Amino acid sequence: MVYTGIQPTRKKAIEAKDIRQLERWVKKEELRKKVFPEPLVSSVYYFLFCFYARGMSYVDMAYLKKSDIRNGVLRYRRKKTGQYLEIRIIRELQEIIDFFSSRVVDSPYLFPIIHRKNKSGRLQYESGLRLQNKRLKEISREAGLDYPLSTHVARHTWATIAKKEHIPLSVISEGLGHTSPKTTAIYLASFDNNTLDQANVKVIKAIKRAG
Image (cartoon, rainbow, N blue to C red; front, side):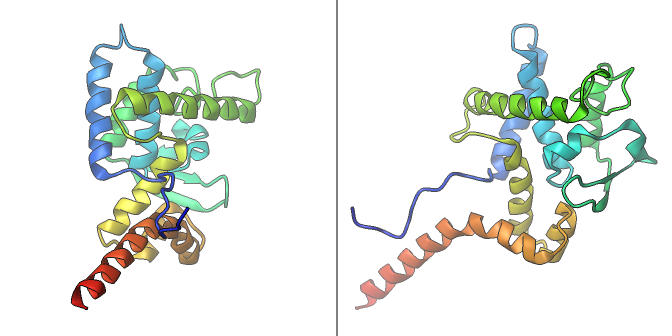
């Protein structure tokens, strides 16, 4: 097999139009949830919450508590780095919080992921993560996306769209809660390789045409 320089890679991010497609799909399915598996609706909202919250990691979302929100601002520490972050509660975030509010009345947590008092929070998070990724794959098919979703896709998508909107790397890094812009540069690099390879092919073709 001849190596062409362009290899298909598994998508780590989706397009802005795909986020809009998910938003429309889940609103439609929520209206008919009596005949549609409700857990899938919840999983889409978990995914969108992570995206709207500047690419929040699923683990950080799972451990959010109601007390983390004060005066319209969500404050939390990243599990991975311990970095302290603040996020303004925009309308999209508040709507998702409201969607789950009736299920966490007697819980200190914002979402019903960690909800059993007699079971380890970590075990509940890990179980929730497995279920979330399994459901996201099903959602990809149901919503008509061409590639599978995962919890990481929400984070990568926020970063990628931010980059396409010409938001400075330092701002993207701060938004993601990375400890260094260098980490963000590496994090984003994988999104560009296929695009750059294709650009190189076009450049070479232009040279050939000129000759």
